[in-house]
Image (tube, rainbow, N blue to C red):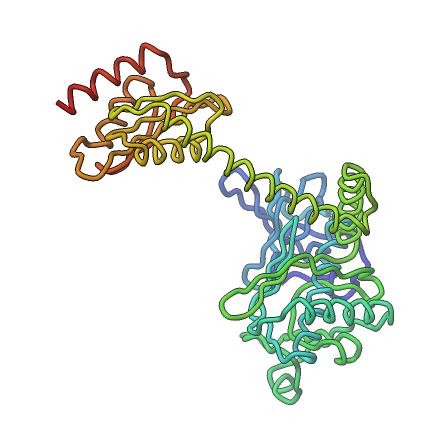
Length: 393
């Protein structure tokens, strides 16, 4: 068994310990000691990092009541070593885990939502709730959580057996096999109470700041992304810098940025509508000027949607088969379309163009399309026209 000092003395960042075992596995070493400040992975919380006697702790896990340290170097069994904790990592995990309890407990008491999943990663943390919370409810949840932060309420833990656990009412009871059950209380249970094996802050004030980053509907409930403490402050600072930079590019303030973006979006939508109308008029004009049953045309500056529009105009203008090329953004786009009653297969036509152009694409006998990196030349257009003339005889 390993004495877990991260429970009995949470603020301890290093300790002396005796190496009980050291086993090599896949180029790494599994080390157990009689005591440790290193928390192993569990309860949705990643393991601590640190060092043991000069060897780096790469991971930690629990096996048979012992904390197993995964190290990059072997340690002599029976030796006395110093175990040192990676404090910033522990602090970050404790902030996230305590914040998760606060959000989950308040979501339960305020909205009757149950936490059905929790995941903590290096760059994000998520909570899955079995009830959908809309934006207003999430905003209220975030506000109440930060009110609890400012109240600096105590975060305490109590170890009990199954009989003791059965005698109390808490938000969530995990299915734990042993009689060494740890229950965490926040604000004496007013904010949260549940079984948990993770590490936590000593008070809610130490969490500092709780931020709901995003949310989405998930399995009939809500998955919300959140951050706490230093992580939340860094994210908020980065967001503020990004908003400031974006606002400057719009020559406006951060508060007026949404209106400026909406205005530009509306102007862009209007410009796209006008461009589409003008492109349609240009395509109709090209079709009117062409006037042949077999149309093989190249248009500079036309993209994939534009060549689609052009082939449709050519067919409406009387062409039996239309193949349009457009060069835009360093790529050549092409589309083939046939009129009603024409049997020439457009997918075979595009296959032939792919071979000539070194492109990719396909479709159906009625229409097909593709693209290539190479530009289309007059020689290619002439060769394809001759091929189509042979098909149409």
